[in-house]
Amino acid sequence: MKKNKRADFLDYDRLNELRAAAIEKRKQLPDVVWDKFEKAFIIEYTHHSTAIEGNTLSLAEVKLVLEDGISVGGEASAGDLRGDQSRESLRVCQAIDL
Image (cartoon, rainbow, N blue to C red; front, side, top):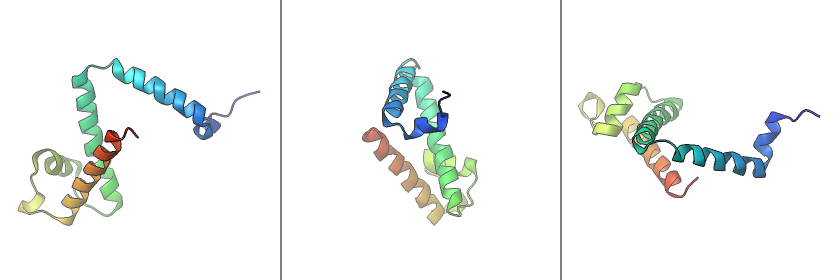
């Protein structure tokens, strides 16, 4: 009987197995590679999640706001703040190992 791959996402034990395998793979990466990946992920995640909410900042502008604290147009905007809140929510999730 062919196993339904979609059912894997509903199987808690299988999800834990996949998570453990991903954690082991992550341990094989040098810290500098993981840090770069994590920074890129946060920037892209923030850009896309705030774009859904109507933010018009480009990916490069989000990078400036998050990494350098440079506000777009010379002043902080609501879009800037949402980007910062999104980044902080990711940090909280990472801290509690979600």
